[in-house]
Length: 276
Image (cartoon, rainbow, N blue to C red; front, side, top):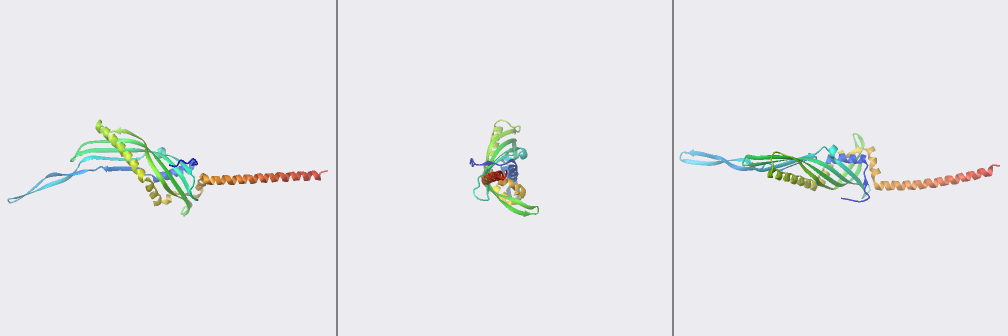
């Protein structure tokens, strides 16, 4: 991630606007059921047909549940409270572009279940709940377009995610059903592996998925024109230019005040010459 020292923290109002956009783009839940539903074809009987002295036999088959079934699901926990975000403004690389760095923390509630089957007979079943804290880091850029809508002229952001990574900060298994011992320990390790696998999987394709969702419904990133002022206020280059202009203005004001002072001195001399 970019650790450029010139990055500038984004103000709270703008950060909340970006937070709402990020929540629209992030997956709210995941499912991992690749190992759920394994079956096996077994012989269930024998059909015998007798035709005179001729006997024919055919085996009957059926499909039954078999093997170790595992599945897990997860969803964001109270994103209004647990989804924390920080945003920094980065120097723009080209005119009309705004660049940002984002860091967000989220909490995910994970539910896992495992069943052990043997040719149609369930030997045991175990489930568990866990909580995972994850961190998202991203760099993205935006351009702006003024569009006419039925709600009037609006400012449309066109964000592009350049980089996005997710990492697991903490995992806590809070509940395991009545099974204990080796099975429970093995299941706990499996939950840990599932969460890590999902974090890695989401991270690998997160950049492309977010950009695809942005392109699918760009109208979701529109705001009234009046709310776009904070963008210019947060652009370091714009601020530098503004400050430079202010300095020039102040210098001009100083020259003007000096000229006024000289003018007042001339008036005083004129009055002294006229008075008896």
